[in-house]
Each structure stands twice: as structure tokens, then as C-alpha cells.
Image (tube, rainbow, N blue to C red; front, side, top):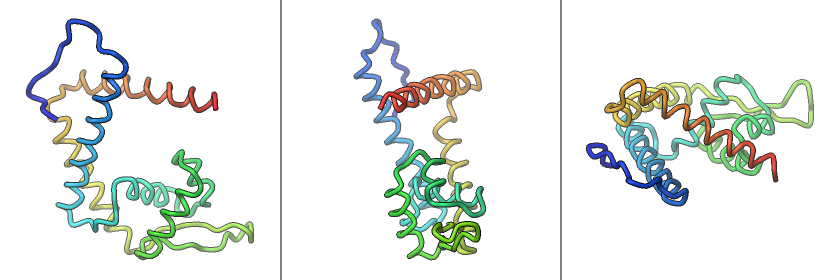
Length: 160
């Protein structure tokens, strides 16, 4: 995404145009982050979404798959797919829940810890590159706008 030119339309942009630009921006940011992950020697199977998944498990210590789905706002079957893939790579393990014999807890392995650290470093580097030209007021304004978009999504979820 070219940040050297700032586009100031003479008329307000349409919602469709804004959404298109948001998708392009998201793709660009995601690509830059994935490049940083690669530069930090993070294995290719650990994509941005999978790293977010691991970070959530790390923060919880041990967590039920259903709680993880709720916390991340993703479907239970997506959690199962992530768990299956990450378990094969030895970065997470399933353990029995001592309080509920029907439930399984997920926790990260020692193998995952340095990878999560590298991902954090990649995030810092990617964020610095993406937002380098933004003064603090612009960052604050962008954050407010993103929170507004998140609130719209949440209210739309409530309607379903």
C-alpha cells in the first residue's frame, strides 16, 4: 500500500469503496506481518491467525477448546482444526480436564514458547513499519474508528 500519497476525495466515499480499501489494507498488513514472521525464522505453518491462537492459549495457561472458541470469536470446528494441526507440530498438547472428565484442556509446549516470543518481535517490527508515518493523533483516531467497526460487527452478530 502506497502511504506517500494521501487521497482526499471531493465527495464522501461509498461504503463499498471503503470496504474494498479496508480489505486491501488488511491484506497488505497481513502480508507484511507474514514476511516479518519469515524473517524471524518462524516456521511457515505458524501463520498470523495460528500465532494469535497460540498466544491466547499461552495467556490462559490451560483452556478448554470451547472457551478458546468463545474467547477468539471463532467456530468450535475451527478450533479443532487449529488444535489438530498445531498438535502435529508439537506446539500444543491436549490434557484431560481434572474437573470434568468429558472435557479436554489445551496448553502450549516448551517448543511453542520461543516461537511465540519471535512472533511478538515480528509483530513489533511489522507494526513499526506499517504505522511509521502515523503521528500519535492519527493512531488514536484510527483506533477509535477500528473500535467503531468492531462495535458494528458485534451488534450485527447479535441480530443473527
